[in-house]
Length: 167
Ligand code: COA
Image (cartoon, rainbow, N blue to C red; front, side):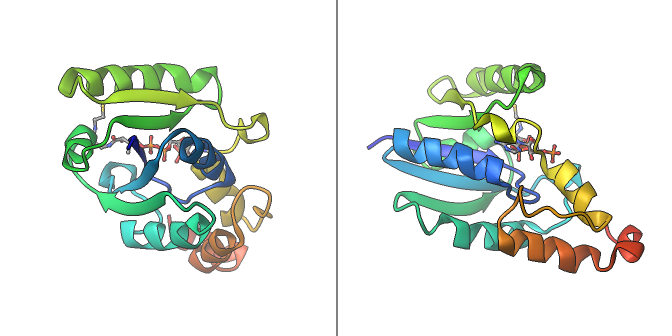
């Protein structure tokens, strides 16, 4: 039974993340999406909100579950008896950060391998920050996020002219 963890802040989940998840679900018997509390990133949505936004989008994957975590990722992986961490590489610009993170995680926990997959190129420029920026000023984010996430963004930011009130 091969089990991988797909960690991220997911503030919010995008179709790019779901593309990576689909690839992970085919490669592994079991995938746990791990929503990092990550206060350092000052997320727009709480970890519980991010988890709830993910949940309906996981229904099509029979072998995927979702949970939140805090603390070190490798310790979470050990607690879950996971074999691997999966991450998406959208473009060359992701490489240095991901490379350093993978090596640090390997230093901390040599048994857990990091595996990279490339999401479909149509998502190469998608990021949660950009999606939030577009939503904040009233732009259409339907191409980038599932409908429940688009609705949550709309609710969080309200009408475009009040966007500066949150995040
Ligand atoms: N499609 C779309 N966007 C993607 C993407 C994809 N396939 N893959 C990554 N991204 C974007 C995200 O939208 C996000 O954009 P943003 O920075 O504009 O918000 C960015 O890339 C990275 O987000 P994400 O994939 O959610 O990961 P992260 O870098 O926020 O998460 C953790 C990093 C949680 C894995 C890392 O901080 C961690 O492990 N934390 C726990 C503490 C720890 O162990 N630290 C030591 C690590 S060495």
